[in-house]
Length: 311
Image (tube, rainbow, N blue to C red; front, side, top):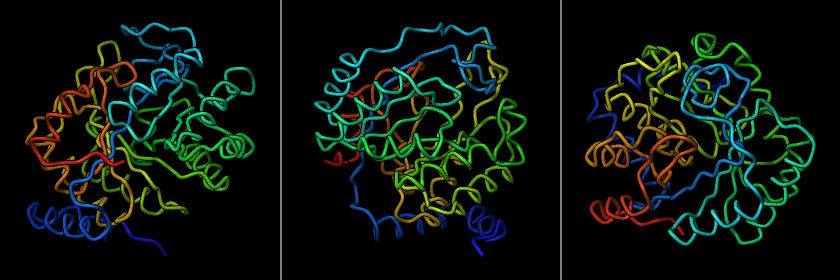
């Protein structure tokens, strides 16, 4: 039967202190308290994407400061990954601004990099757009740990953010990933003008996936000049805290990741997010194309809050 929207709404709208307290209790039952996984995101193919996602600096449909760049070479990707691992990252994520995976040299390079990193015992996640079951199987055979394909927002609000694909396309990709035996990484972006009902609906879609996500990245919108959402006002931190806490209660074993937009969050707000159930972050000066806290900044945050990186 799954979990109803009414059940999720009842949890999401609880008094904040009660909600966070319950989420923290559940988090302590399923995870090592104070342990946070550090992730590093590499951009294999930057810019020139044909999609019209209204939040994205890499869409070729908008006049942003991001220009298409040549594909990152295999040697450079491995070197970037090694530097991130030396600084504490235990999960390497590789992104490409593609609508979908296409067979050819570029995909072969991704497979080779995945295989080399997986052999080192590193969790490898890629986000390459839509893909087929056969392509998902090839990634699995190379040693891929997880595939990221965010739902972004609720099914009801989706068409207001993206028109070049639909919500069901997202679900089909996640289905292909699950069938290949690869862990599912999927989350959303908060602050794109959606309502509280949309955030509840997004969470409803996430917790009712046929295969529960191993990883749930949650992003704050970063309004990019030149995109349709450039003037979108910031969402209060409390909505992110509510989303994290509710996600922790419904997905107790998942890793909940603080992703884009963390650069604008205070140490105090990040601390509340970790207390509510977040247990991962993306570190490094740039997250695809936008500013992000550096490894040294996060070292200081970890020391202040008594957090330890997951090995």
